[in-house]
Image (tube, rainbow, N blue to C red):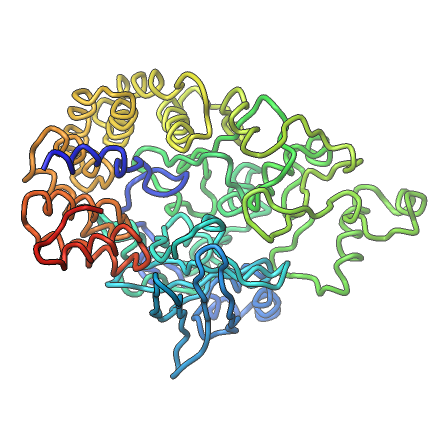
Amino acid sequence: MSRYQKLIWALSATPFLLAAGLLGQPKLPHFADSASAGYVGNAACARCHSAIVESYRQTPMARASGPAQEDLISGDFTHKKSGVRYRIYNEKAGVWLSFERQGANSLSGKRELLLYIGSGRRGRSYLFSVDGFLFESPVNWYADQHLWDMTPAYQGVTEMPLNLPANASCLQCHVSGMQPPLKGTENRYADPMFSYNGVTCERCHGPGGNHVRGGAIINPSRLAPARRDSICMECHLEGNVAVERAGKHAYDFHPGDLLSDYVRHYVLAGTQQESLGAVTQVEALSRSQCKIKSGDAMACTSCHNPHVSPPKNERVSYYRGKCLKCHDDSFGAKHHAEQPDCTQCHMPASLSADIAHTQVTDHRIPRRPWTQPSSVSSDSDWKKTASRLVLFPDSGDAGSDTRELALAWAFLEQTGARDGKSEAQPLLRTALSQSPNDPILLSTLGYIEQKHGKVDVALELYQKALALDPDLVDAAANLAVIEANQGRLREPIRLWQSVFDRAPARSAIGMNIAKVLCGAGEFARARSSVIRVLAFNPDMAAARHLLQNLDRRPPVCEL
C-alpha cells in the first residue's frame, strides 16, 4: 500500500478554501424563509410602485437569474483544446447541455440545465444538478463577442470540466432569498434553493412585509454613506481577497448594515495595476478624481439609477447629463462639444483582466486614458510584486482584523499569487493567540504548516479544528493525507469518504480513496469510488484509466 500512499500528498492535498477568495462555513441565514423574514417579493411592491417595478424589470439586475427555458441562448461549438463539442438546446420541454468527443478518448452525455445566471448583457452561464449537488456549466455565453466558450477558469483545459460547484459566493449576487448550502456541503442546496429570480427590490430596500402594512422601509439614499455604499458593494466589490468575519457570512448582509461587519475585502497595494477585473467598479471609482474630490457626496447612484437602464440609443445623452450635473453646461459647450459621448474618452472599455471575451468600463474615469501607467507587464506580475494587502474600503478599524488579514495572506500564498517569505504564518499565530478556538484559523495554519513540511504540527491543528467543527471539508481531507502517509488506512478512508460524500466535485479525494483501497486489495470498493468520481467528472483521464485497470482480471492498480 505504501507505494500508492506516497503519491497522495503531491497529487491531492486540498486547499483550505471553501470558495475562491471567500472563507467561512455555511449556516442558515436569517432570510432563508422569506415569508417569515418579512420578504414579500416584487409583486407586492408593484401594487404602489408599478411604474418603477416595470422599468426595473428590464434592468440587468432584475434579470440576473431565472429558469433556463426563459430567454434561452442556444449554442453549438467545439472546444479545440479538449476536442469536446458542446450544444445548448431545447428538447421535450427542457433545456439541455450535451457534450461529445469522437476518437480514442470518446465521450458523450448530457445534463439538464435548470437555471441561468447572468442577464445576457455581458454574459450568461447555466446551472445543472447531479445527485442534488448544483454545478455551473463548463461553457459560458460571452455577449461582447457573441460567442460560446469555456468558463473563465477553464479556457486552457484539455479535459472537460463538469464539476465546477455553484458556490454561495456566486449565487448570492444573482438570486434573492437564497438558502446557503446544506450543512457540511459546498454546493448542495435545499429545495427551493431561493425565493425569487434575479435581484429583487428588497435586496436594496430590505424586507417589505412591514412596509406593505404601512411601516417604513429603507431608502438607501437616506443612509449614512458607508451603509449606503455597502448595498452596491455587496455585489460590485471583489477586491483581491474577500474573507468572512468570524461567525458571519456575506449572505447574511441586510440593507442598512455595514458590509464590513460581515466580510472584509483586501486589495494589493504598492504598485499600479494596468488592467481591470470584471468586478472592480467600486475599487476603480475610488481612484477617480471625481470620487476623490466629491468624497461621500458621490455614490454609484450619482451616475446609475438602479431602477432604470437607459435604452441603447439614449445612453450617450443620459450619461452626458450625469457628467454635466457637476461639470455644468458651459463646460460641456467648450470641452470637445463635437464629441457628446463623455465615456468614450473618460470611461473607455477594455478587455477584462480575469474574464475572457469581456469588456470592462473604466470607472477610474481617467482624464487622459492614453497615459495610464503600465509599470508591470501583466496582472499576475502585479499581484506578485505588490507590497501589502490593504483593507478596502478603509473602515477605520483595520487594527481589529488580524484574523481576516491572516486568512487573506494565506489565500494568496495558497494560490501562488504571492512570492517570498510568508506573511501568513506569523499573522495566523497571532490571530490564534487571540482566538485559540477558531476552527478556520486552526485549519488554515494547519495547511500552511503541512505545506512547509511540519506534518506533526499540522496534524494537531487539524484534529483540534475538527473537534470544534466536524464539518470542515478541507481540514478533514488534509488530515487524511497525513494519516495515509503515516501508514494508516481506516481513519483516512473514513475522513475522505465523509468529505467525498459532501463534496463530490473534489475528484482528487475520490481518487485517493480508490488508490488506497486498491492498494489494500479492496478492488470492488475502489471501483465504486472511481465510478462516483466519473459520475461528476466523466472526462477525468486518470479515473477512466484506473477504471479500465480495475476491470481487468486480475485488477491492476496502476494509474
